[in-house]
Amino acid sequence: MIRSCLLAASLLALTPPAAVQAQTDDGLARVGEILRATPLIDGHNDLPWALRQGFGNDPRAVDLATDLDASTPLHTDIPRLRAGGVGGQFWSVYVPATLPPTEAARETFEQIDTVRRIVAAHPDVFELAATADDVERIHRAGKIASLIGMEGGYSIDDSLGLLREFHQAGARYMTLTHSKTTTWADSATDAPKWGGLSPFGEAVVREMNRIGMMVDLSHVSEETMVDAIRVSEAPVIFSHSSARAVTDHPRNVPDSVLAAMADDGGVVMVTFVPGFISEAVRNWNADRAAEAARLLALNPGDPAAVTSGTAAWDTAHPQPTAGIDDVVAHIQHVREVAGIDHVGLGGDFDGVTSLPTGVDGVDAYPRILSALMAAGWTEADIRKLAGENVLRVMRAVEAVAASKAGERPSLAMIATAASPD
Image (cartoon, rainbow, N blue to C red; front, side, top):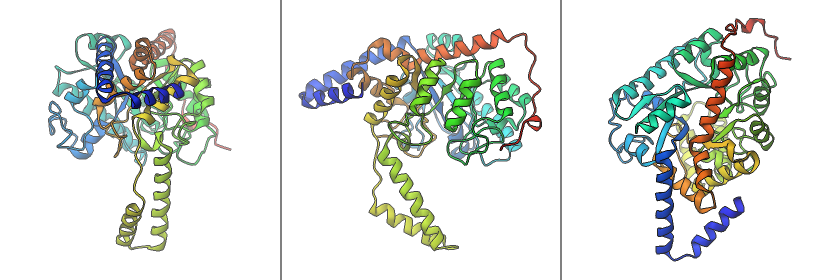
């Protein structure tokens, strides 16, 4: 499929410019028709955190009803959501992994409140959704279904009671870790402690199954991925991850896990973070981090020297860029390994400082989908990628929870779990 994408690109390169534009316009028109009938559901958008960082956590401090592309660093606003055909959005209620757990819990509830205030500020555009049926109903009404995703299991402060309260507050998935290993699960970007999930971590996954919260495996280590898929009775998701075989970043999903995830019925929502989708960008990021560490070691107590040295390195080593072709390559690879029923979209807009060329905001989805159609994807394929696959997983998670309606809430505590080896 990657070869077919490259072939399509080569044919377009040989086509007269007017014909290329006509093909592009036709592809965008077809995508528009698809997204009017099928909600495009993005798995991860950090607008609530961007509002907290830059606008006093106030959705009314910036006019989301206007195109903010030129006036703010935001990737998201209502005109661009509409232009992107977004029909369902998981708003991330991220807080940093460095926070003490009790503070993380409090701030996560505050971020849930932010999502609710975004919706309340624009009731003609957004409506909160809790189920797959809600998403479809809201989309048919011409609004954007707003869902809540927690990013980091540290926010439950080792309490299944808090987990249940977050679900009651609207959270419909929880990413088990973020950048750091927690007291019960290993992160992809930190030293392992548990070899995957601890016994309490397994209890967390089982309770998520019972209450109907999707298990999100973005950010977790490969061992945690394997453990969670083994323990979970419901399909898992990756809300914003890409393919490790294409870009060898630990945040991405290896082929063995892609295959296991597919067997389990889950979905990988491909993300657009340049360092996750371009090997050149990943290597540049690693080299820059190594240079910054070297300068810091050579200039202890002299931040100005570190800053100037880093700036000089940047000048000598221009940052490479990713593009839509890189996004397409990851989507294609997930499809090839896991199958068309197990791939989705999770941009991570407003959670990153740079984006691929041509993917500079939430209005980029039709361009990506049009590129896939030029590579041979059918309208049925695009519907699955855009939203049908995620809706299927949501319904499967809801069905597992319904089958457990008679079970009592888990009283598992981390103190009863075994210590790591």
